[in-house]
Image (tube, rainbow, N blue to C red):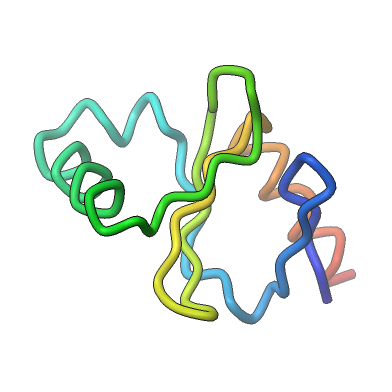
Amino acid sequence: MYIHLGRDYVLNDRDIIGIFNLETTTISPRGREFLNYAQKNGAVVSLSDELPQSYVLADAPVDTVYLSELSSAALRRRAEQMIR
């Protein structure tokens, strides 16, 4: 199944490693390090012109971080609806 992440972008749910709240994740130094590392390696894809609220870590085609304006709760609900 596919999950809409924002800006007409969909991702296969089998490729999703995790859905994270951007605000709470960047509180810790380890979370900031991870996102900085991904940014430096060109692995970040922004799906919005707005301030992102969440990010999705996916393993296809390579490890990629998708920044979304949708909240992590909204993305999680979309993923759960696919299961039903």
